[in-house]
Image (cartoon, rainbow, N blue to C red; front, side, top):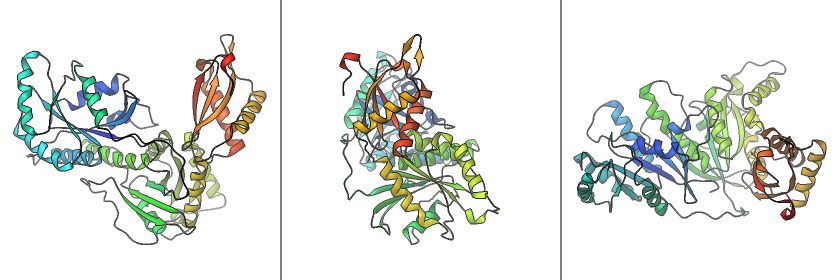
Length: 449
């Protein structure tokens, strides 16, 4: 599935240095952490690149198998969710305290996952602790990897071991006619995600539970639309706001489940409650969709419950676009999943934005539009040097990505890049999908298509 990154979960009992490792990796620019509007992403996960492979590192709370404490039991459940989702699991232990009965119980849990597990012995801060590492062979999880997160020792070795166990990298390719459109239904709790899913499927079905401790990220159901197109609808748990410390651990993993669904989808349906309008949390979820490069349709649900007067729809639509201005390319639909009002418009819109996200533009037509754009508005000049765009080509789809061959990257101002994006949208459409630009520096004599 396009743009999916493998997931690597960091698990272990409390106070073995999991978060220290996570923070060291994400904080030293090994991680490619980008700020999504309104989302503190590093509290949930970090996108990491190591030796050319990209993956997502998930930090979890400590697992205390014996505790009856409510908060600790919630932490245990969230770690189980992370393990259920992960492609690779890093099991952290502590060299100073040695192997404990809790470590043994966690290792039993890990073996049942049938996932690749890397046994990590942390806090190997000095040579005197070397002998203590050998007792961890008793966990039956293979050769341990010795590190010290605090002193930055062995982190490269651990990252090498993670990369070795990642699933094979998928090759890019064109979608064929039988492609099943992966459709994620995302949004806050109680905005009507399950009702819309039922409406699109034409039947009642078991929904993913939003009860704390749910161990599945989503429920997938494949179906054929009225037009004969094939879809796999991914119904997700609601993404909550953080309210209090006891809710924070649950919020982290409801977000994570939905992020996983967004990452493996082709099109995301972002549901908004008409009675509440666009909330801060809606903007956060929209930011996730945008940053993942996914095609999107904004669906304003419960439209039947809103009192209306002349111009209400247009006024509401204008406000939605203003509140989600970083994603102003997404079409906005107004429906009632409960009554079925305008729900028949959802799948045709999904098809349309998927086609736009999959669209390829010929190099000739692309350069004609960019040439006209430069004639209409000259490229910027910085420090006496003028930006020169020699030519462009489309590098990939989903999202449409364009390589611009230019004289110097530092001369490409963000505002001019946005201007070029608007010119492409005006010429070719691309409604419902973000656009990406990749800048390539070339000398003038080499800059020929």
